[in-house]
Image (cartoon, rainbow, N blue to C red):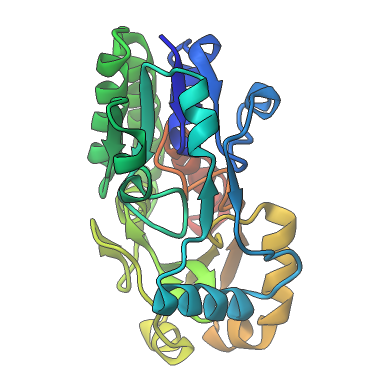
Length: 279
């Protein structure tokens, strides 16, 4: 098959399924595995967000939504020239990746597989669905992923549960939404602000303070560890004001934000990084 992925998590899934050689194009955000970076790119961002704070990015995204502007430009002609048998897109978040609604009509009659997971089980189901669409066997990958999930959850169950809050954006703070609350629960973290299976939306730092977490996990959406650490320093006074006994900063771009195989890595990383919280 010839496959175009407009979704970084789908790109990761296709490589995990052993189908990386069938990818003919990806997005400008597809950076994992490293081999994905060598593939042709058929998207670009319409906003220059380099160096902007989370508050500035929040304002820019809100303005784009108000004006009906897209955050992504898709090279439809380039995709058509590649003659793909399948295009993979998503319906979860217009900020995180190209929305399927932006390309469906222009790509017709090319088949478009729309992924829209909201829970961890949805993500696993989408991996199987993508494998089925590509006529490959997902069982070896799924067995590995589910085995690792079970092992990490068993490790977490051996320790007392902890009261924590996970934030996927910092200014303003966004609590855990979609599949992340499932991961937190498996990791032994009880998050009173989490919104399982639903999109996250902005809250106030006063609400974070009122939740009284012993653990604060910070993994800004789309940012690597260095960028996240830099933003943490911008809002250090607010973080310190929460009074959590432990603060963990994680790579949101590599883990948690992308609904693909590395959500299993996310659970393993969370259990590892919060080990001494239970000791």
